[in-house]
Length: 248
Ligand code: OAD
Image: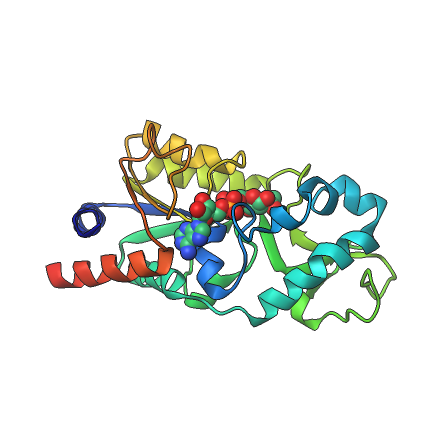
């Protein structure tokens, strides 16, 4: 592992433009469960039943009760960990340009990252399905489920559900920063949900080095990633940053 940490520190220091793609694994150390694997949300629930737009339209009360209520409770308490903080520091050092995140927890921004593309939207905001008025999730009252707008319309998270399109500006910008970067960090994603999983492939095809950080291999590991640093995100980021400081 020490060799790969050193290699990553060298690759990041030499890069002209770095982009990061992050997934649920980066927020595990903040107490937010991932979707897949041991302890993952989709072990407990069928995503097509609780996170598909059709299920929500058919029965918003059920989806709020099964999924969104718990997510709100977990996210209200979560704080950035060393991976979020390390990525924010890399941006301040002028090394990392943009984070593309599949996460809806807003923790990259809380850690201080300025350029974050929220590929799957954000759970920090709700919007009315009738009039589009937006509410901070922390401010909404869950005495009534589903929560309602002042116009009586049903509120839904400003996040992308299964069966919905990726916001076009997020898709377009992600493609651009993947094409333009010369190093892509791929951290804590199982890389199986499309179209997010295509982003590292676009980077690779455009000539970037792809560095994966994950305790487990993914479908990218053999063919797309230049190397995989097997470890937990916060610990690996901390070690890469301390190696970079030694090199200054
Ligand atoms: P997944 O839950 O599919 O994958 C989490 C990844 O994080 C796995 O590869 C784990 O090995 C890894 N992991 C776990 N703990 C980690 C740690 N401490 N440090 C680093 N890595 C760790 O999450 P995503 O790939 O983000 O979409 O899932 C993609 C999308 O599927 C989500 O955005 C969500 C979900 O359904 C929607 O809701 C639309």
